Structure formats: C-alpha cells, structure tokens
Amino acid sequence: MPRPTITYMETRAAPHIRDGFNLDRALGLMLIAALPCLLWAVFNTGLQANLQLEITGLGKAPGWRGWFLAALGVNPDPASLTADLLHGMLYVTPLLAVLLAVGWAWQWLFARLRNRDMDPGLVLMALLFTLALPPGIALWQAALGFSFAIVIGREIFGGLGRNFLNPVLVGLAFLYVTYPGDLVGGIEWLQVDSISGATYYQETAGDAAKGISWGTSWLQTFFGLTPSSVGANSAFASLVAAAVLLYARLASARIMAGMLLGMIAAAALFNIFSSEDNIYSVVSWHWHFVIGSFAFGMVFLATDPVSAATTNQGRWIYGLLIGGLVVLIRVGNSAHPDGVIFAILIGNMFAPLIDYVVTSLHIRRRVRRYG
Image 1 (cartoon, rainbow, N blue to C red):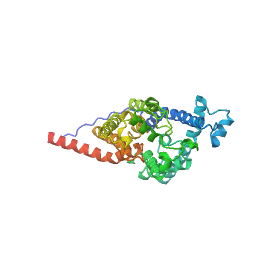
Image 2 (image 1 turned 135 degrees about the horizontal axis):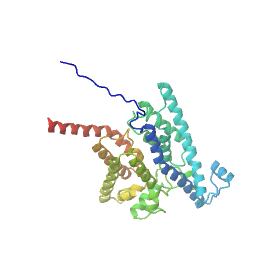
Image 3 (image 1 turned 90 degrees about the vertical axis):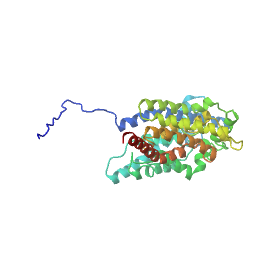
Image 4 (image 1 turned 60 degrees about the vertical axis):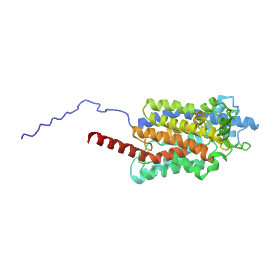
C-alpha cells in the first residue's frame, strides 16, 4: 500500500500573529477599568477627610498632611474640588506606593529563587488591595497584609495563575482576622481623634431598616459619598468598570449576574423571616447592593479567572453561592458587617468542586445519550 503524500503549507509573509491579545494587554485593560474607582477614591477620601475636619472645627489636617496642605496654601474646604483631590492623594498615594514597593520586593525575591522573570500584574493587585483598605490604616499594617497576599496567596503556590484563592482577598482576610478593630470599626475614620462611634456599615444598616439614611440617601450611597474604604464603596464606579470588563470580555457576566441574583434572593428570604433583634435581616436588596464593597467585589474579585469557576453553569452556581453568603454573613455575624471578602473566599474554595460536578454531569449526560 503506497504511503500517503503529506503536503506542508509554509507561511512566508509577515506578520504571523493570529491574535495580538495577551496577558499584558488583559492586565492593562483591567487597570483602565479600575481607573474610575481610583479617581473616585482620591476625591471621596479627601472629601470625607475635609468634611470631618469641618465638623470637628479643627480647621487643619493632623500630622504631616496638614503641614503639606498648608505649604501648598490649600485650605481643607470640602466644597473645594482641588482641596478634596489633594487631600485624598495624601492618603491614597503613600498607601499605593508602599504596597508597590513591598510587592516588588517579594516578587523579585521569588523570581530570583526560581530563576525566572517576575510575574506581571503587580500594579493591578496593589491597586485593588489599596481600594479595599480603610484610609486610616497604618502603612505597616497595609504592607504586612499585602506581604501575606503576595507570599501566601500567590507565590507559595508557584506564582501567577497557580493560586486557587484570590491573593487580594487572602491578604484582606488576614488583616481582618489579625486586626479586626482597625479594619472593621475600631479605628477612627482618617485618624481624626474626635470622631468615634459605630461604623458606617452598622449605622447604614440600621437606617436602611427604618427606610431612612445616615445623612446620605440611597443615591449618595450608590455613588460612594460615604466614609468607608478607600475606593471599594462606590457602586457607580464599579459598574462603570464592569461595562469596560464585559466589553473587553475580561469578566464573566454569568458570575456577576449570579452574585446579584443570589444576594437578591437571600435578602428577600431574610426580609420574609426578619427579626427585630437583627437589623441586617430587614435590609432590602437594593441597600445590600450599595453598602459595603458588594459591587466592587462582584466586578473585580469574584470574577478573577484564576480562582473563579470556569464552566458556564458553574459560574452561575458560583455567583449565586457568593451572593447568598454575603447576606448570610451580614445577618449572622455583625462582627463582619461587609461579608464580601469571606463570601468570595468561600466561593473560591468551592469553585473546583462546582466545576467538577458540572463537568461530571455533562459527561454522564453524553454517555447516556450517545452510549
């Protein structure tokens, strides 16, 4: 029997690139998507700081920030956009710079030990970590948490793409467990000594249950005009980022929709069986969406392609699980009034199992159909 003739096709003309989309471009687009949250973070952080200074009558920011603003001739007036942006930059910029320096040092060390190039994505990871922190956190605490995120959350598993948990969430969870008072409610907002009391989460939950707001309407809370985290509290900025990520196909719409539907279903269920002793059980779903970092987590953290579910049906289940857990944690444990970080981490842990079950069911269905 004659051997078949094999014909080879040779491409001579350049270029030979089929698709120019790569990891660096994907990370760049994700950074662009996060820019609205960063810009809002700078503005709102400065605005809230200036508002607290006006309320307390201090007239000058404490510490080196007050000296710096005075040297520039800037009066910390909350009605001044320039004063708000400059004051906000004095909180966000040092925090981001410290995280970038710490992250670069750890990545350089692991790259040197493994004799390979440094993993990309450090800037995006540091930015997301910064946005989720409270503005008044000590820089050494932020550096410690980010070190935990880099080393334990990613590098110990082999680097980018090999971790099964979102490293940003790992670092934030470490800080929440290690320094719960500083991350949840014990720290005075922006280190203004005369401001104390319950956190904005706790106050907003109680007011939402009564149908009123804690000095802000639902629309103001939706835009993020609240004393909360650096930049994870604006649902509006997060939705703008979601539009960019979905257009670029860098995030799963199924995960976002599933998380939203899971939250709505859980909130409605708790509203039906609400208790007067638990103010979180009567909070409606539209308030759950805007308080805390729900929208931010839904857009940037739950959709992480490395730690999230990968099958289409699994993404729905994964999102529904996280959305329901957020409400469950908020209602069941007042020590974690946000609930988003731990809900997504639990979702990360169940993501491989969800994909396995979905894939197994598909295989069994095909075996029954085709033999």
